[in-house]
Image 1 (tube, rainbow, N blue to C red):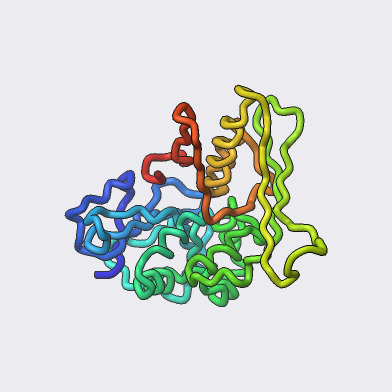
Image 2: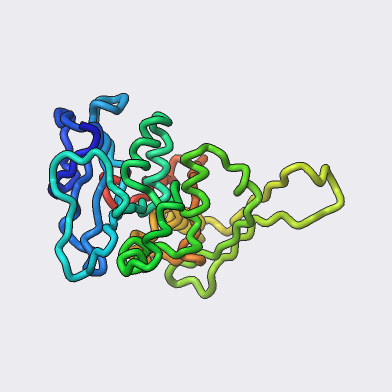
Length: 269
């Protein structure tokens, strides 16, 4: 069996659960009244360390699904979703974990779930569905970086987004104004105009002025998917809210400074 739908078990997939290659764990709570939330897990039989792998949250919508009906995929075997369904991963982390799988395996998973990011043509017949905006796009904007970065992560081809301008602001509590970051490289007369230019930012300040705290909070919130950023607004705000990052690397040369893994829940770490 390739796919198996299971009841909510608080991500308690065991290494001995090998009767399916991929598990869809039904979330017991709805989203804007729509029962669309699931968690994708890879069976231990398909991982290198013989341990199940949580891929991430995915929302699945049925054409004609209403918010006032308690619809869920039936538990048990599921070979693939038919043309009356579509799905959308809820974070870049979801697509990053899929991108690390064998090419054929990740293709089979995304195809079986009719993913509208990797297969945008599958979205056309769902454009007028209430559940698309109300639930699948609940924490995702139509211009979200997810729609440009996720396909590149899955295909491994970043050529179309390599020159994308990146600019954002970040502000933590008690700061009078946000810090602005812009990685757009201005034109200059030196060097090869065809050569890709890069830019870095340096944050300077006195000892104990809060530089490390600022960067650790920035890393945590930048790593978080949109629905987690909404829960972290007391720690800091990122603008634009839906900007995405495929990699975040934190390095420290001081033994007294540590960066915790920037995630909210244990299964995300």
